[in-house]
Length: 342
Image 1 (cartoon, rainbow, N blue to C red):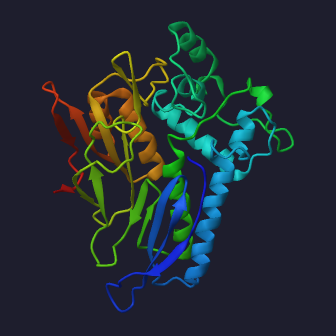
Image 2 (cartoon, rainbow, N blue to C red):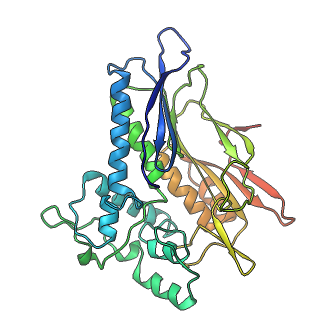
Image 3 (cartoon, helix red, strand yellow):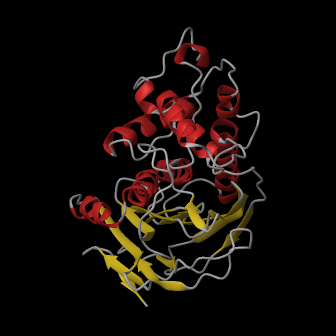
């Protein structure tokens, strides 16, 4: 979750019937652009109020969970400061812990020092030695933490937990979509698309059809260049069912040292960057965008075959997996319920 900036705009979108009235709230947040489209039909709250409330929620998420905002609750906790965690901090920790258990350790939001050591965390790292990796594995991770954070008179002291460092990047952006969607459902909104880099959608678009999302083609590029040289593999459509949609991949963030490519996906169990042929995982989850976010990371940690087994064995998941074949060319695996068109 990057440095926070919000510049909200509100526009009226085309309506599919005389009774429907779609609006769009958009701006800059969490280091990129966000957009929320929703149908105001049956909603008894002014559009400007919804805009301001979404803005306030994003600010609250940033000041609670951002590792880049030095005064956020997460940053202060990671710096060793005792904090009085708000409900969102505790909620996020509980969700992260459950996803750690569910993934068998593949999604570990307390493995931040490993990401830092490899240069993919909140601190700039260098190439760690095998000994350093072993040391970090023994001193960080959810396995060392309780399922519920212990509070003393509402205060959480990291000293009592061995000064752990948390990094919610694997789940926070998707979970942010769920938080916005939860607010909109509370207003009675039925048709929505929440896009904060990750996506939650439900119901119909302004034309009366399913929401559609473009899927990137994973092509290696200079990690210092701007994103923009990606093509689209295809268009995913929602079928009007509520779901989260998240893509994770190793093709956008990596570095090369001594002729070897080090992907930004770190296996918390081994402590090393993954080395497999899975390039990207686009995951659809009916449970939420936070779950889709975590499962996409999970897939990128375990690799192609285990990712296929994971998705095929869970009726709440669908996925589109892109991988490098034996000849080096991109190939794809699409689950039965993933609707992809050119």
